[in-house]
Amino acid sequence: MVHCTNEDFAKLCFDLCGPDPGLPACEAIRAGDEQKVREFSLQRLPSWTPVIETVLQGRADFLELFLKNDDTIPECVVKDAMAAACERKDKACIRTLLNHGWDINQPICFRASILW
Image 1: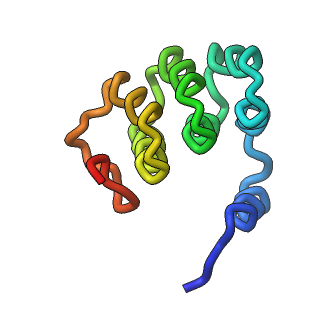
Image 2: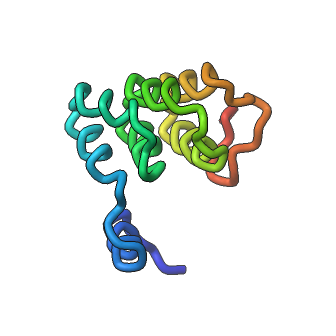
Image 3: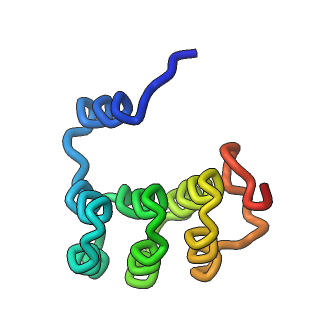
């Protein structure tokens, strides 16, 4: 089995697909720039990467903005966000996803269990 770091994976994705159009929103999330995140949350996101980034950064408040302003986020993205929140044991992000309609009985993939 080959181990791939996040940086390796990001480079591979960039090489295959070009720059992620959601990168500016991710940078605002990482910087904690609430004003910019609010601006991005009011637009249709060019990619779903920022939704996952909010969970990886433990920013349930930013996750709330994205979920409140866009109810078209695909289930697979929400499933990945829930799996990441469960892996991190991030109760605030898990609660936010549940408050926005995630079914607690819904399987979330092989990475983690919500009851784990």
